[in-house]
Length: 335
Image (cartoon, rainbow, N blue to C red):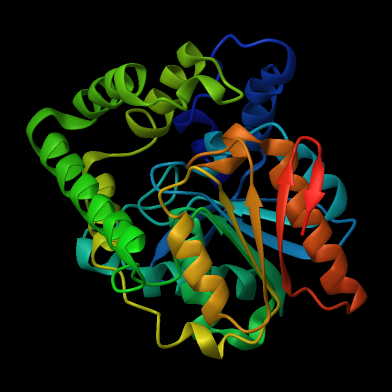
């Protein structure tokens, strides 16, 4: 069986029974599953999809436990119309290999996988972006492979360690570490299904912003189950969990990033103080605050996230100055 057939058999498409704006989620996932081949890079098989082709290359990295085949909202279809878009499953996620040695699941290895994937596809330079953990990986890539970065887009993330920036950032870092330690404990004791059940219950009972996402609570439950219980092994989850908790602190390296950089963040995201710190550290950067969004802005405000990215890359391609601070909301942008 070839790589595409193996991937198709291994990964059922997301179908949460949505309608209207959400109906494209199942179709997009099914198309991606059917189309994604693999390449052998750094000792693992990376599952990827390259589509579009009408614009500059753009690599997008998904967040923690959110493989590309189910992790992106339907608005990603518009990215395919504007870019040579490269989506992939990071190591230990989705249909990419879970290494036998968990110590090989680190942010520098994640970044090296992007470099290897670009090499395999003969892409010299690309726009690089990611959400949450994907933003951490993208920042690591920009530090390790600066000559290959056409621009950098960081969403709802931190480029280093939030601790030490200010009280709010310190709290964000403590929350991150504690949350990931708790998830590790739950998976070790109850498995992936136990984690999904507890996360869904917590969101329903405690997340005051959950109802504002573009997916219904029922669809969020289904997507969470697919992303984690059906698209991650416990070993892969634990390895990636530790990679985030033990990530390198890039604070001393981010001021040396010369690529034009977009730092975007939901106004209610716990990482917001870290985003402001990263914007201050990266000299050629733009900060965009997106109203009406918590963590995972593409799920809360997909059109505003798309607009922030599209406007930024249009300015980069035109050679315009990208620096500044902006707020994006349903009624427009404000400096």
